[in-house]
Length: 132
Image: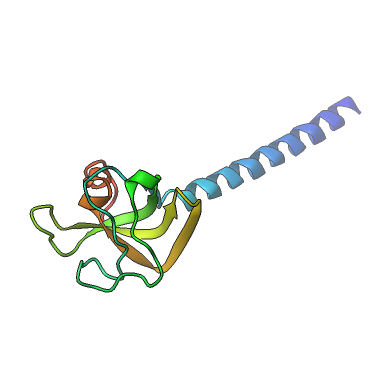
């Protein structure tokens, strides 16, 4: 009787562990593709564009981002786009922006683009954010 009870308890414990492990794995996979990038003082505001090009349209109704307000973006990857000045041509594919001062956020589908040197001096690009 005790052995049967121990087997049932062990089976239930193993099932619970596998379920929790599966949930943890799913959560890790879902969040692995997005990197939170807090804006740094680069001397520039950050526009949110419909293409990786400063002459493309900005997302309608989306204000420029500012490091002074604690704004940040969620970037999926980087891509080569328009080169601006001597700053380079790296753009972050941006799935969401968060306005820290107002605690509001805006998601994009399809993604938007932000110019990496103006976001964080392209630090995420240099530190392993994957290429699209």
